[in-house]
Image (cartoon, rainbow, N blue to C red; front, side, top):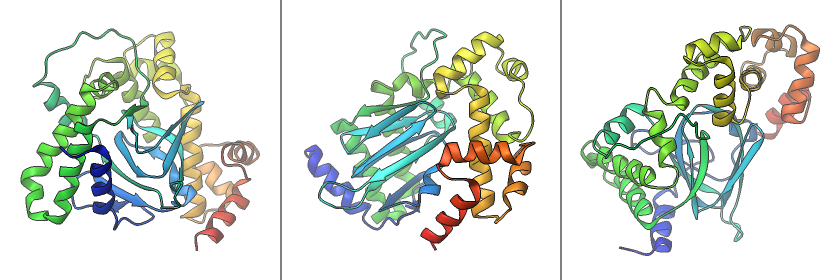
Length: 296
């Protein structure tokens, strides 16, 4: 087996054609990105994923927690979470470079069915974490990305390499988190049901007791597990989703501040502007104008 530095160098060469936006690789659920990413694209609701930085570094701020990682680590997110990402180039000046694999619970569940069962308590793990990269995990990524040069092999080999990446993550310190997304009766999986409702109905009034029933938990247990998994309360989660959706309406839909506020569920444009500025650093109109000018 090659050294980790040799593996990393090969991954960098394989991903060298990535753009400063999510770039498809031709491999299902695998994307890559290079360079400085527009800040508004890094503030989003992220899907469950395994993210591997190849060059530079990145931070992910979720609720009141911020995690930093670089090529020595990989990032796992097991649940849909509104987050703010920030990327930096390498100390040498080489641009940020990363690859990501979107997680699908059905694939994880199929893999877990072939592994020994593990006893789990009702304790909910956080829905995101960083762990150290291992040579075996890096090797699986190398073989997966090599398929970009042999696209005819993707249908036959990509599923096997994807399963190996997931297997290596399952064997690592964040394996329990990955198991949770494929275990219907886990606390994290039940919280995920409530999250899907919030994401669909973010403009509607939020009632914690209704969400707790969807998750088949008492209100106190639901609130505790929700906070453990997302680093936010249900109300904070909904607010973040609303603000992110409003930012999209302002930037892409070119809506007015008042129209965006009402469309995402705010009853007061003043309150919306205040909370938007707290989240993004500028009032909505100025933020939209600045972002549009910067990336035109």
